Amino acid sequence: MTTQGLPSPLARLIENLERLPGIGLRTAERLAFHLLRVERPAALELAQAIRSLREELEPCRECQNISIEPLCPICADSSRDRRLLMVVESPKDLAAFERSGHYRGYYHVLHQKWSPLDGTGLEGSATDRVLARIERDAVKEVILATNPDAEGDGTALALEARLRRAGVPVTRLARGLARGTSIEYAAPDILLEALEGRRAQSSSSD
Image (cartoon, rainbow, N blue to C red; front, side):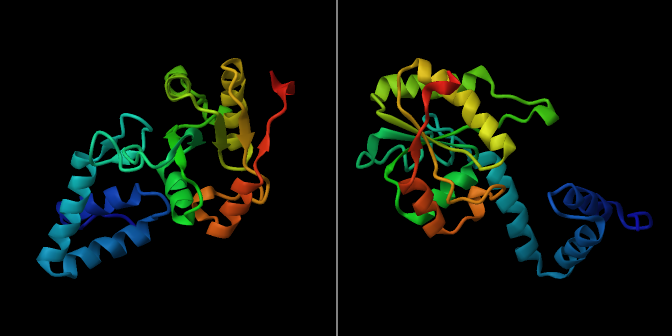
């Protein structure tokens, strides 16, 4: 199935939808024809939501989470414990811990991970920002909340090597999270067990 024979606006929409994760050509075509059938205000509202997503959101200047304001609501909340800093891979992971309601420290979002198969590693600027926050806020514990898979473990080890030189205690989530599980999909009680059972990392990796 191709977009040949379709009007160019419809074909262009199908081609763009197909680029989304998990969307094949048939699903993209079905979504495009659905948008063609719905009331005009509903279709335009979706278009405006996508535009706003790109134009209004920016990284928080503190934690790099997505935010409307320069400082996200979590970083602006002075009631949270500045001595705790949880490092996560993505905003989706941060949202999962916030939904659990059991963590009251601050976060730092990497937006990247160690993935040698894809030829990607951790940029120095990512760890530099974490180290700067540790020094400024007198952080007493850094929780490495990366996903329990090969890439997440590699990301945590790369971070740990630099953090240990700063003399900050580093912990990892307990293995209540099954290997290969994505944090964003974990149930709140599983995240609570992983957080409460976190363990200090030995210095053998230095």
